[in-house]
Image (cartoon, rainbow, N blue to C red; front, side):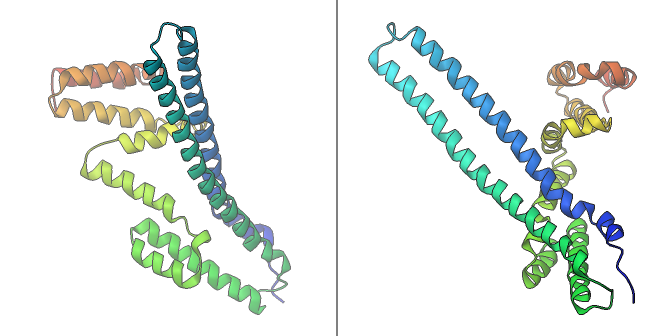
Length: 245
């Protein structure tokens, strides 16, 4: 009887279970930052209103309060949408964990239930490969036919393709830089300088467009903070001010 080594199979399935959990962690961090930022801003404005309430005309006071209420209502709507996204990620994680948990119930590789599980896993691998290759429509057909919505990372690859298209076609690093900002902690942990590389490319594109004043301001804001680890490259980049590409 061909015994199944569950630990070995779980080892190669790590990305399958890790992706939605990482997406959930990132969503929670972003939500926390958004709430802290908005409540701090509203609190500061409200404190200013209370400080000057007797100096403000009634109409002006009402407009200011209405603006603050509108800002909080917008935040509430945003949080409700984020909550739905987080619920979907939690559900996706549960279904993936349940799928992997089936492995402990299989006794041999010849068991029909295990072979069915393997066929579904093959579909997952094919979907992943097609998404990585840019064959999104074909991948979606396989997702729909197999009922594998929670097992495919379509939204993640859509984001990757959007960033890649922006880099190649628009020569803009803004989407990639936004991703770096959202994942700065993880990039710092592995000592990855991707964010610097993208800022450097943005600076080069400004020089290429002959927008020298903007390039100088951009370098001061975004390249100077990297001087401790990237000073030689920053110095070489500054020569582009005299010798443009």
